[in-house]
Image (cartoon, rainbow, N blue to C red; front, side):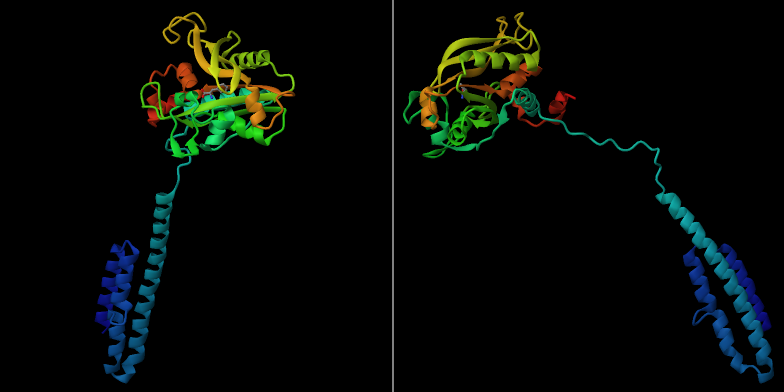
Length: 342
Ligand code: PHE
């Protein structure tokens, strides 16, 4: 038995030297000290020895067991440390490594220009008011002096939801809503989406954006309108900007004007964008028709007002030299991300 023990010990030492991980160590522990381990079996076989030899045999087996256990525990601790070190290395973070590029979003050019315009008008004391895109015929037409069967209704190819409900064809219904719900003085701008049954092409879209302006007070005049629009143009595009009024017609304003702006591309010199004239047409405007004031519950003997409306897409296109409106709606990030303005 002594010989057997010596062999087990030698073999164990040899194998221990080759163990490099926890799994190997566990297997060895099982092989030697497990239920059917070599040392366990040897200890069990002691019963067959003569009684006087048993104590010495027991001591010898214990000594070998203790020795192997100690060595295995030491090796186990070493392996554990190594594995921990490896894990730490695997999971370590290099804080100096440049991080992955995170794309930063940017504003759509239409919102960009809309915000710039809102900033100019809020700076002049205007409130920003919004209204519904699905609108009652009453606000979109009727209260704006466009009764049913009025020929001017044809100018706006309307999407009807029901007989009396439309997708608003302009932002002017927000004027009507505000006049019926607020008391003068009123000074508002109303940005928003509007709808017309137009075919899509380079300069038309069935959905586009407008910005409406409305001022009502006791002594508002046409020169206030001109002064306000001049200030707006200078603030937005520079000190050399001018506006030019041409007679026009809208049922809800009287008198009415088409308003031209100094060409934002050539600043008046004449270029391809303004077809050599130095002017670009961007606004409709006028003095609020007294009939509209009265229909909306504002005393036209006491109050007057001016109103204007502009299409934002046109301004955006002129501003950035975009020649095809469809580019604004296609959502191509490569196109849209060019208009970052910090
Ligand atoms: N609502 C008009 C349009 O869409 C623009 C406008 C607004 C004209 C306010 C005059 C006054 O064409």
